[in-house]
Length: 182
Image 1 (cartoon, rainbow, N blue to C red):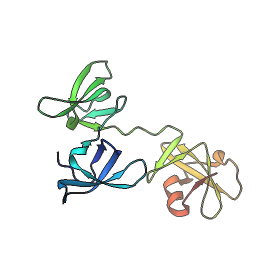
Image 2: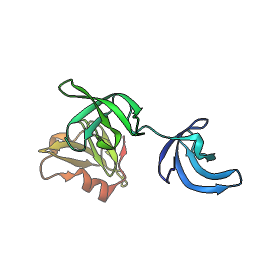
Image 3: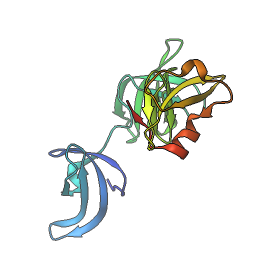
Image 4: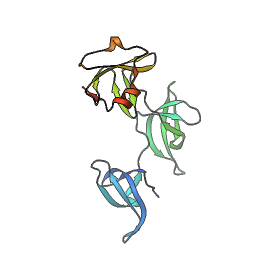
């Protein structure tokens, strides 16, 4: 099986990793790759025969059907079909268990908890206070679907002062960040 740069793989000796270079010809053969090991970040030279494609889903993961749009829970797999295609046993919200090809399933991104917000990939706990680069303290809360905050020179809860006129979290991060949890 040919792999490409960026593929998540399982190596029979080194464990999980990612292909960072290859395939290329080596004195030992023509199907070699450079793999970055997940557990320590070290690089390993490996033959393609020692690699398998990493599973896209694990039992318990949520996945969405590309055609139906239905959300499923992965209850088994991955399995290889007779034609070499990978499939998973999936359970729909009504309890029906079916099989779905790996290529027909999309990863479902979990919704953040109500007391959390995500900005530029960073999760902010709305029950905590944060300190900005100027040393000021911020308190945040959800106001009509937008996370807004108030700033203070003192480490105190300012949530009672937060309104629809307060700074959005995105603006606080952009103008005063990075924000560090106190």
